[in-house]
Image 1 (tube, rainbow, N blue to C red):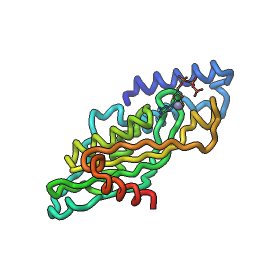
Image 2: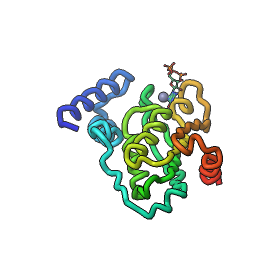
Image 3: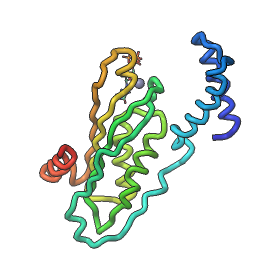
Amino acid sequence: MSPENKQIIETSIRHILTAVGENPDRAGLKETPARVARMYEEIFSSLEKKSFDDGKVFDADKSVDDEIVTVKHVPFYSMCEHHLLPFFGTVSVGYVPQNGKIIGLSKIPRLIEYVAAKPSVQEEITSQIGKEMTKILAPQGVAVVITARHMCVEMRGIKKLNSQTTTSYYDGILKKDRDKKAEFLQEINR
Ligand SMILES: Nc1nc2c(ncn2[C@@H]2O[C@H](COP(=O)(O)OP(=O)(O)OP(=O)(O)O)[C@@H](O)[C@H]2O)c(=O)[nH]1
Ligand SMILES: [Zn+2]
């Protein structure tokens, strides 16, 4: 983020603090605008990256095409685009390789972090992760299941504490083949 844009955030946070009735110059708040600017740079970092460029792919033996690769319950944090409050939970990603192409296992959590690091809604990050997996690997099939808690639902408004939202995206063989889909779901629910 450019120094100019960080300065804009700092000034805006000062305005917000004043508008809600706070004194932005009191000791506890003095550093807050700069802190918030640094935080936004971090949690919205993917807005400055045009695309995900860290999906290392390996060529493995073709027999891997008979497997379902599942990386499950990866924690994530994002910010809802309606209220700029956090929503967070876990993501499980499964795919069936094609032509022996497999992705480095750490790259799936990296992809999740990339997709989540911007204002968003849960449904969109679910399908974006699935579509990125397809772009990187051209697998026979992909599945993404996200379960999350939304602070905008829990701490304000309707105030439904501990409620959870689940979203899922299926493509290819994991959409069409009931047995494969059931195997994936059994694995993530085990
Ligand atoms: N579908 C979906 N909705 C979301 C997500 N995050 C927040 N929302 C919802 O976005 C909606 C925004 O509704 P509005 O009526 O414009 O805003 P609001 O007056 O603050 O709504 P309430 O939260 O009902 O008080 C709310 O129903 C939120 O629960 C998300 O990831 N997906
Ligand atoms: Zn919200």
